[in-house]
Image 1 (cartoon, rainbow, N blue to C red):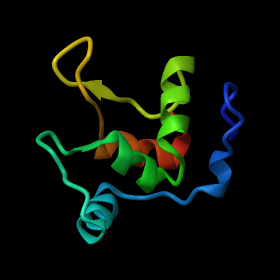
Image 2 (cartoon, rainbow, N blue to C red):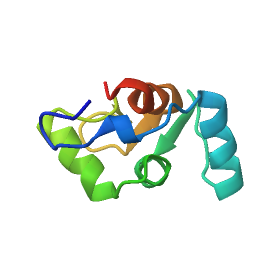
Image 3 (cartoon, helix red, strand yellow):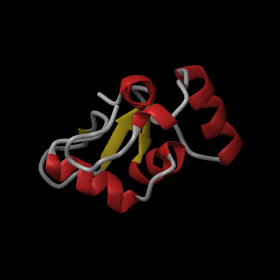
Image 4 (cartoon, helix red, strand yellow):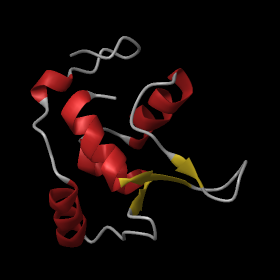
Length: 91
């Protein structure tokens, strides 16, 4: 499956479980925050894209679900579950 907005090809991505993502975070030294969330930089590394790609996906309504802490100008984070779903189906 290919993203209609950016052309990212999900068929090339293997399914990755939340447990695997947690282990990758631990191995890479990425902090996991409450609610099983990681920051934008860690999410980009886990997905194999740049933080700029994540920002482009957010602005185009594409990419994994994300959360903004504290409202309008808070930090962006991604739930590991959202990243796992993104790996599986690109949704």
